[in-house]
Structure formats: structure tokens, C-alpha cells
Length: 335
Image 1: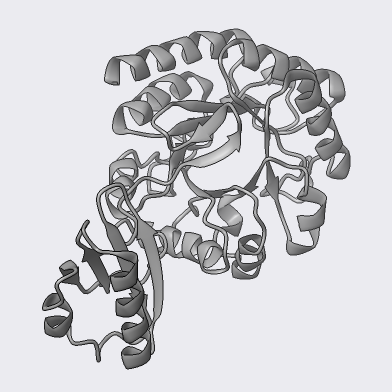
Image 2: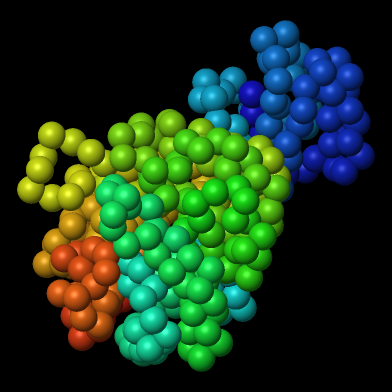
């Protein structure tokens, strides 16, 4: 249940009202202070709550029951968009466009530093790269693991780009202490024990949509993180599995405005994993920006034909430079 209070509500009235709700109905109350009003979210068994009584209070503007099972990720409880500050110069969700660019897998210091320097010059504001790689085949390259994390930090030191990389298991959380954004991959979207532990950190989390996950299931996974105390969640649409086989996945562009309506969390789009083909990255990225995405995560490799993973969907630095210019131009036109 959500209760919107009138702008004229005093702190004393708010305190008295919330105390009475807790005592009378045994509910937990989340509070959000917006620009024009204060919103109270009641969590618990609200079937006993007397809506007519609440509506009769002078300080209440309106009240409604919420059907969705996700509360903290719900825009009804949090009308303003969430803005996640990564560094002094990078805030995701503030209306600007941010691109996370880099290789699928970190392969060497020369590779990751060179790509980082290149994408930074092209306008990327974050560096992506896989240190731990979940692969369909157990015989495929699994990443450099802790060495890969160290190389990402080296690239950050030399370029200033915050780093984004994927975590695989709860026991690795301490290793990610100096990572700027922790990515939860599609295969781990419903690894609830991992999500709960990430909720106990203060790290921004990039939560990718599962291969066959519905939007509600995706939001419920975000709820796991937020329910454990971490509100710094970004949702990443990376394509879902359908009957179509031409592309690696089917990018659900409609998920962007749907999430924007249902939730206050920033939306990032991964056109590389959706397409599986480098020539499709540009049009899908453009569509995502036009649909309202807050950012993109794009794979860039200095030598795609010889990449240790996902070379077919990776742009060269030169191609990324052209694509980034078009994306930022489109974003300016939309403002």
C-alpha cells in the first residue's frame, strides 16, 4: 500500500501518523521524500488497513493498494528516478547517456589498457571487461580470474575509467571490494543467495535479465538486492531467448519503457549480447537510446577475429568510435 502525503504536512504530523500506522497495523513503513510530496510505502499484511480512515486524514492526498509483489523497486513507492553516483563525473540515471565499453574477456595488460584508452577517447565513461567468465562449454576460456581483476584496476589507474565486471559466486565478494560496479550475469539473475549478499554491500549492481525471465521476475531479483539494504541497482536488458535463431538473443526494446513505467531504477541495454553480430550493435544501440535507456554496455576488442570470447559481436575501437559519436548525437537530439 502507498500513501501520498500533502506538501503541507509538518514533521510532527508525519511522525505522529507513521507511529499510529505502525502501532495499529503492525506494518513496516518506507518513506521517500520527493520534490513535491512525501510517499509512504506500507509493507506487510495491509489487508487489515482501513483505507477510508487513512483517506480521511487531513495530511493524506491519496492512498492505494499495490498489487505488484516488488515494493522497493516499484515506481509507485519511489516516483523520482533513482540516480546512482559512481564517481564525481559519472552518475547513472540523471538523464545523461553513459556507455560501458570494453572486451568480453580481459586477456592481457596490453589488451585491456589499450582498449580502455581507446574507448575513453571515444566518449565511454566506464570500462567493462570479464575477469570471471561463465561459458556454455566447460572447455571454453573461463577468464583470468583474480589476475583479470588486477588488470582491470591497472587500466582504471591509467585511464580513470570506473570498472564494471561480473561476479560469479558469494565467496568472491571480498575480491570485488575495489570494483566500481558489480555485474550479475543473466545466468545468476535468480541466484538468490548471491543477490542477498550483494544487497548487504554498498556497491552499485548491474543486474542482467535472465535468458527467459519475465519482467516481473527480473524486478523481483532486484527486490532481493534492495530488500537487503542496497538500493544501487541498475537493470540490464541483454536480450531474451525466443524461437528466433538468426540472432544470439532477441533484444526486448519494449522492456525499456515498461521498466521505466514500473520502476524507478536505471535501465542499461547490452546490444552486443542481444545481437551476437557486430553489425547489429549500432542499430540496436540506437533503438535503445531512442526508447529511453540510461546507458549501454558494448563489447569492444582490438582484434575481434582472435578474441578469446565473443569476437563475433565485438566492435573494433574504430567502429566503436563511429557508433559512440552517433549515439551521443542521437541523445542530444532527444533532449
